[in-house]
Image 1: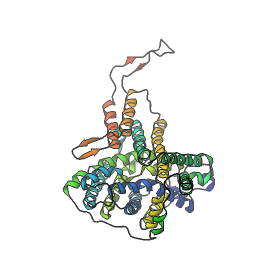
Image 2: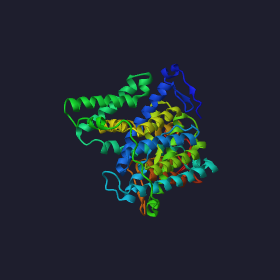
Image 3: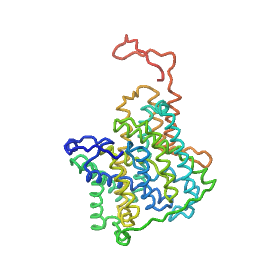
Length: 448
């Protein structure tokens, strides 16, 4: 589990891929861990704020959850666990949260989160026991590619609509993703590998010059950093188990399964290693991590698309980097000072980085189609992909009583159901004249 093969610096200079069982030299591995923490931080902090949870608890539990996931999967699946946005709607509904400040009814939400994690872990145990061949039948490349793409596209509105309050902020988002792009194509070696982190720092400096120096926008506020303590325990909260809250929150397990499944498929496509045999373990690890997080006062957790985007950009899939990231997050969870530093990063800069990362996730889905030579001349594949992309991007939502299945969930299950319905051929086929060969007798089924 902890026996990683060291890759030589020469391989790095040549732009080689670092596989899950391999690692960089320890200092570079630690740097990659920092980048993963930065990548997850915006969403992991934003989600608890929207629900009235303590962000430092969320950071701490993301680190602990990632270590749990690493241990349950025997260190074979490179993933980071952070706060899940899937819980926001049901938690707000269960607690009647007003949307600002601490959530006074957080305890009942925590009980529901724990039960959700238990349901999720049970699903994982079933998958681990009976295998994943049925998943392959339900989710061939056309489906998995669409689902992975949707994960990125569904999140696109967050930075574009919610992280730029003014025209200046929008321009700073543009400056940020240009900075990341320039680092990606104009640098080499480890700097290029750390493109997200370096681009973020560069954009933050530019933002500080334009605002604190020239007064063009909202300046960076450093007072929170100066006043925060270096070390301090976050405010833990004990759960309460309310039947109504549990019934409302527990079904989110279905969405977490869909998210995790898509993420593992994306990692499989990027690494070239079939991780299906670890699918059940991944579900169990995520479920147990969610239970532990809820027991301490944290949000439900899920494998993070942001970190998959970082892997896609860097081609470093070493699980060692995630161990370092988890340890960093645990330390930072006990540091109000660091929390203040991260929260001082301008929101438009975080938004610009998010645009890059979410876009990389979407293109990872397209890569699945390309690598598996998905034939879009087949009506079945065309319809499944087209509808899935619009459902997910438009955040198509279906409600079942008090439970709402949002865009990623409807897109995932819609793709699976559509493929199952369309996965047949008409017994007859119609002749199609090929334009270049009028005498051609080629045939093509109506739907394949």
